Length: 203
Image (cartoon, one colour):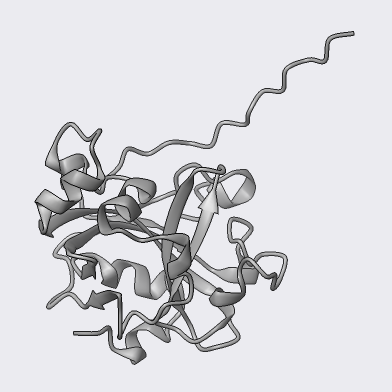
């Protein structure tokens, strides 16, 4: 079952809370979404599209309902749901979820996990558990291999706050665009961005 286009044609800050409770199906594993973050394109200093279109963020400018997948810190893959009409770059980062089917396979992919609650607890763990790779960038969520099943009803309670690990103005309380299901054990801990300290050059 695919996500209805009219839902994803809205800006990401409207779509994000509606994705809580939706189920993402990917390569033998299904996950109920419990935590997301919205990014509002060129209006958002925390967004990859803040400075306009590039080769890296081109999928964000395409039609809604596709995956925007990117590599970060040279080692992690993160996945986003593209929102808004084509030409407007907004997206929802998938931050965490509960594995509801295929837990054995998720455990095989996430060999270092200590509990099932940690299998997809964080955006990098999530992509590993579902087998999402950089090559999935641009894939249509209605036809797979990764598909999105809308939540049957809105989450009964939604918490909001600043986005985690975002630098500069985009990580402040002015952008409370992180949404999660309060009390859910799979939600990742909030981490404020900490600038890396540069090691003084030896002279």
